[in-house]
Figure (cartoon, rainbow, N blue to C red):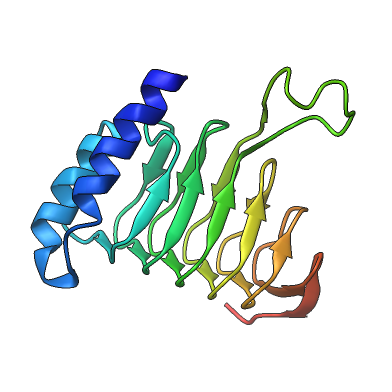
Length: 166
């Protein structure tokens, strides 16, 4: 795990020296980070942070705004047409709640972001969650449970605010 973190830190250090105008270089470095080529429609505005990278998958026409953190140890799948606002944290891993276990190991669960989702500024998505197609996660929300398709959620913990017509 330490080797994976060191690798990710080296690549993101290069990526984070780039600007919005360096889109091709950003895509190339992000592709190296995740171990697969991203589509030419992928846009990421640095800075960006991750502890691994190799367990991230992204679809076409994905937009990631600046200062996002993706901890992907549990696996992170981002579908087509997803928009991720600034300062969003997508965290697939954590530690056991029991004090005697906290430093012993890491608990990791996957996160799935389905097609055409918008995750607004400052939201946090916790491991084990699926954000359903066409949904919106309101700014500053903390998502700890699955988000149904075609809904807007908000708050801490996030709750359904309303349905969205598709």
